[in-house]
Image (tube, helix red, strand yellow):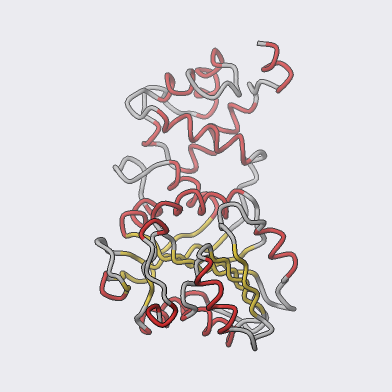
Length: 285
């Protein structure tokens, strides 16, 4: 089909097209689709998965960056009124607006399916989680290395800010390993299908952006103790109050950030908020 269209996989876009129906079936099973669901598909490629989604969901909104693929997809789905094709970058397009324009039906929910190139995996996942999009579930194809990071436990080398963000907001699970041979062209690494089931933020996280800033500060300088990392942090809290905040959260400041569990980050963020520097005060300094 690519030859017929005069197209070829673009390495700069991380294009590896899924060509195995068994993996398509596993993705569909993981998505737990209902007839009234809306699906936001990121990176539909040649439309192999999109075609099956259109048969099962109320609406499919597919966001594709490659102009040549968009032309093909528009021709392929010209007779499918429940498929909306968007030529754009998933990192910048108005995802909330697209979902608002194509809401799920009664009893349905909005879900995300994506085959993610490595270079946009982390920023796109963070966007999906931090923008408060009205989605109930996401099924993403990622490199196996990234899948390990999403599920990593505290104190391991794979544990980082992305791990905390995902585990705070979702229940993450690996659905299936994916070998290189199911793609064209085959990538040099193994992949995995991961299901992220969204859940509400804990009540203690009153400001998600502030929580994220605390986590980033804790991981920014991994060799520093947590106390020192926070004292040289984002300028959002009084650095002289860090010892008091750590004591209030019941956390030893001599530990390193990567040893804290998600629950400990929640307690730490809540404690640091008491010493938050308001924008006006921050600008005066």
